[in-house]
Image (cartoon, helix red, strand yellow):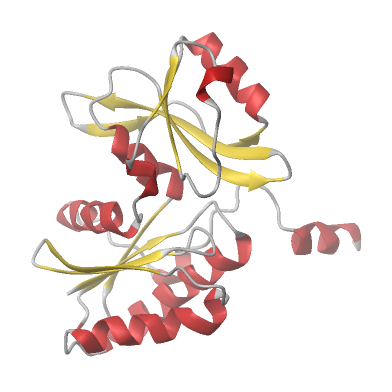
Length: 230
């Protein structure tokens, strides 16, 4: 059994899969924070299918970027479960998961997540048709929408895949060679996380839980405060 955990924002999602097939996909929409509902939601999902935590063979987790606290809790939950069940652990970023929806696109694929403060986390990929994989063009960064427009203009446009409830762009205000992926960005990222996890396990790319950490891209306020005291 494989459990996928995605806590990109106050929403998030969980997925349970068996032998490569999705068994159940749950959205975590609630006004309560993940600290109150994540572990109960995982328990209920496993209970629905008579699965004990120690029966999990693999766990996939989205490690950000996204909401700092939500991402940290999701990663912590995945590491705790992996260590207690001896399950294989695979992690990836929210940007790579979003970019997977653009598979096959013959140009720049830009994954975008809200970074708040008027900025966006973005990373640009290209799709390798021969290998059928995503290849990184740049590293994740926090940029303003105007800066992203400039980057895309310099690169000749591209496809933007974003999470709709986090950021709702106005396509008419963007260059004509920039298009927005419809529909898919509303889906729970736990679903592509299941596929990604199986792919990585086939490659023998399971990770040491101690080495898996959140991908914040920019420093948290706590880190900034700690640095200022030095």
